[in-house]
Image (tube, rainbow, N blue to C red):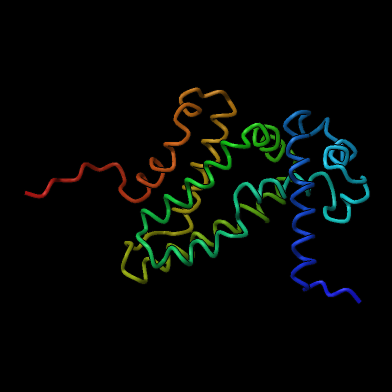
Length: 208
């Protein structure tokens, strides 16, 4: 009987999943979600079409896998736990910069898949359950832990988190719509969002 906990086997499975996701990202970017087929993706990945279904249930499952990988949601819990021992600004900037860089690098793929998730009810539900909700829970826990440590004032964490999520999703949508300013200054946005979150927009009085 095969040991599914074997670390070498798990590495091989993960490598194959990433190979297929890489191919799906290229095909979605080139053809768009609707015109792409699992046959196209299999050809791009250099595997049989049946192999794809050993790792993913459907074309939609591939799309969700791409989004989760872009956001690194699977590693965010560890990152935020480690961030509790660091300066909040530096930690949040590092987390935000990494994800904004991933989005920028694969923006053609984002442009192909994000609109589809907004109009497809099934994908929309998967996106919320597998990405938006888990991310919100992790960020809420981080903020609540910061409050308990006395490193952050008491706030309505669920609403603050959703406001931040809305900013990031809104920024992606604006860029898809063709906002040249966002495209030009994309690498500055992590600092802007984190600055607004931690500092607000009030003018601070300088110490005498």
